[in-house]
Amino acid sequence: MNALKLLIIVTGINMYDDGQLPTGLWLSELTHIYDKAKEQGFEITIASPNGGDTPIDPESLRPLVLDKVSKGYWNNIQFREELKHTKSLKEVSKQEFDCVYLAGGHGTMYDFPNDTILQKIIKDHFENNKKVAAICHGVGGLLNVKLSNGDYLIKGKKITGFNWFEESLAGRKKKVPFNLEAALKERNSDYKKAFIPMTSKVVVDGNLITGQNPFSSKEMARVVMKELEKIKTNSDTK
Image (cartoon, rainbow, N blue to C red; front, side, top):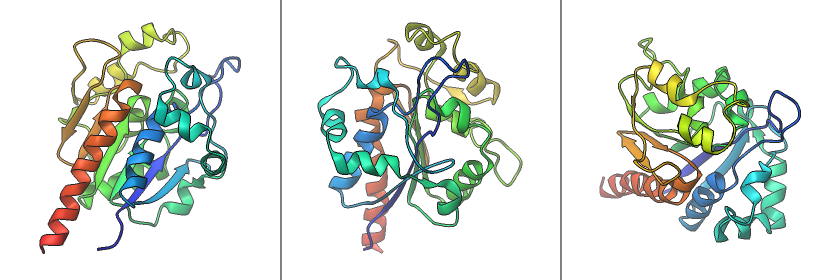
């Protein structure tokens, strides 16, 4: 069987709209899925709305949150180069992947929700029975995705994402462009969250897999791999 293909979409935004506070990708929300996919021999493509350099949220590099896996990749020159040269969504829009994964970080709140190419990639893959996964603020990229029947993709779906209380704990309530938790609920999704804020929570609803926050990175990677393993198993038994 051919190697499974994973598309990881990251932000290209490096500042909040006040132009003073830096943001970007939350590193662990990429490294854990990347690590597991690499281990399994996946074909991995990293893309961002406009392509090019991936800014990293400096907060995600702090010793307290920089776990062993993320630290290893951050110290890897080859990996760092890969993050500097992401493909644009336009370049990959005609390709087919087994899973489209939206990594998080506050930067995604600016360049994910209204990107029409991103919306089309997600819609096409979801309607072709492929896996769609998103973590933390990356879940915002699902907000405006409409299916062929005109319904929002997340309508009636069990879903999670960074909640408003966690935004308060992160000290970003006054910085973010919108309240992600409220926006997900406005789309009539069945929003779920961990009982204790800033702890891991992953929700699976069919081919849709979402993670709540950076602390879900490890579990998210494991769950996505488990779900993709089902594709492999089904293909192998045919």
